[in-house]
Length: 203
Image (spheres, rainbow, N blue to C red):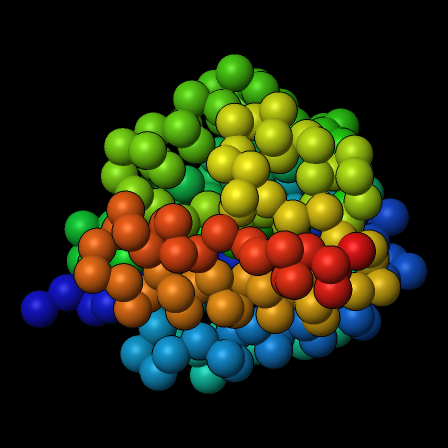
């Protein structure tokens, strides 16, 4: 029998995240803690390149410590997404639901393996073709707009104020839960869209 939900979180750990390191990390850990029991979790961080912090572990083992989340370097967003998708592909057949949560506060600056067009096509295929839930948390309008440029579904893209990290990840919690309990991936993605009230709290 397949497991119900696989969640892969990608966290920006570039230098600009330093001033919001503690709030972002707590919000992310709260998100992980709120996932349903039995959820399998992978966590990456990225600066100049992506780093795997947890690889397909139970949620109780996925909590990230401050020492594991240094904030320095550039923003290799495309590479981080590309590596995350490849990791998910290797495990996807074992799960009924797939959720990818990507967070950043800045624009792409440092990727060397993946380009914009390639990532846009990958994300489109995974969302529309395979029914993955992909949530994009952009701390600031330019970061959120960047996700839309990547072909993100507008309802799954949140523009949040960095100090409101808790509300951004709280919205992701509700969205992930709605997706996980849905009758199928398509209806789940519709139910997961961020609400107007959630967006107001994030802003």
